[in-house]
Length: 409
Image (cartoon, rainbow, N blue to C red; front, side, top):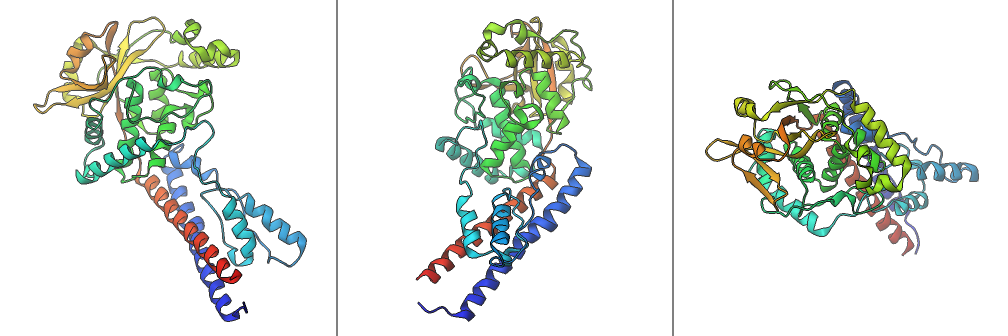
């Protein structure tokens, strides 16, 4: 079919406008927001995303020479997602751009991450709809946590969910929990709801950030196995704040080495000497940390300072171990404080009185308390800008394919 130069020119400028819009998100909104955030909260969630933004745009008109065309292709193929820098979109040929767009992976799964299960996504969406209907984002983070936790009442307890595979994987489950998985899952959903971030993949990302050293999965040893270590690492990223000392906590005075002293109980350490040595080294680092706890007989005295949604870890007298169980402070209808947790007795449930429950736990000596912190609004703005950016990219991809199809016809 004979080509219409005027129509092609209109198509060209339409694509250019989309390109400039995308470039604007990349080069104005994201950099300014990230610069502000880096001053306010070093080491936050978004910092890991900004490290990916490193590639340059293609710089020469396609077709000037074979060398320059090859350079453009190489540059395009290296552009990281989601921060595509398409300043020079007008200088990139249709064929080059379509080639790159077609090559982008459809899945956001990172190495070691399990694929999302339909039933988990469906349950997540149901909880999000509940959160919107109840206007949960308008409530304090602790109340959001209690409300989200209520959605899991009755879900079964299961042990060893993170250790089903030899290779460390990011396990996501919304239908069964151990005590730590319950805390991590409810916390990750709640922190998203607090800033109206209802994206499932962002929820999964928050799980990874909470579960692993420096927020990044890198093998079995990168998991935060000791809950004191979990609190410390998440406190560095402003996910939680350890308030045990503020509540009058006293030092535990013990060496945390339970895992290395019971190597045979951990298949990953039995099979791999390097993993075992890594755990030993982590325990050595933990020796520098003072773990404080509130003795069992003093828990009621701090009820007035506790809030719904506070993270409670059960301190233990077991040699080499810091805590044996965890859950959230739960405010009952009559105002009394209890504990919502994934109970080893069988399911997610509420213990009516916190101190009474702790006093009945074998080997328990008291509690460690951490308070959740909502994500900062800057991080939410960045995620929103990225979603806008991805939407523009999708529109561009659709338009390009449509235009190419018309030209072929």
